Image (tube, rainbow, N blue to C red; front, side, top):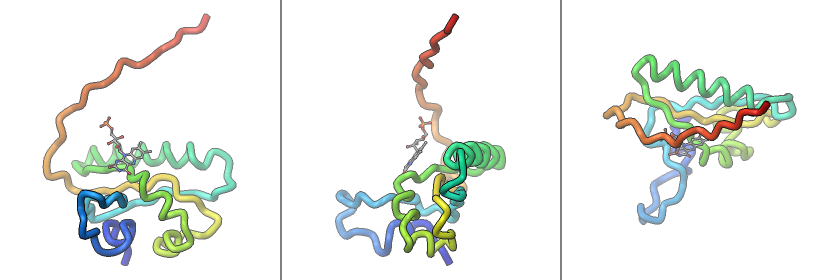
Amino acid sequence: MFEPERDVRGGAPSSDAQSDTRPSCYHAPALILISGIAQAPWVVEDCALAAENLMLAAYGEGLGTCWIGFAQGYLNTPEGKNALGLPATWVPVAPIIVGHPTTMPAPVARKEPEIRWVG
Ligand SMILES: Cc1cc2nc3c(=O)[nH]c(=O)nc-3n(C[C@H](O)[C@H](O)[C@H](O)COP(=O)(O)O)c2cc1C
């Protein structure tokens, strides 16, 4: 069975936690990989939209999510695809970990959007 922390990170934790730069899955119990046929038009955009919908729906159910972009490199290797049963012709776009948050993070400051009106 696929375990996000073990399989994405590739085995035991490094003995030197400070210099361990492998992607963390924060011990989440589940990873949902949104992927599609690599040659399909708009595959990245479609998957990103699906990912956003998934994250909002999970939040509505009281769950926490995080897009683990650092896992995409590994998941796009033959070994990573094999671990998830992903066909070779598919591309992993959005690895989303899902779990029960221990705390609700405080809202973060937002930058002002840069809007340019034309016309
Ligand atoms: C494409 C993408 C990839 C990300 N990859 C990672 C990741 O590998 N590890 C991680 O801890 N967070 C990752 N994040 C989450 C961001 O670091 C950040 O927490 C998130 O976008 C929320 O931003 P905010 O704090 O401004 O709301 C990723 C986010 C996006 C959009």
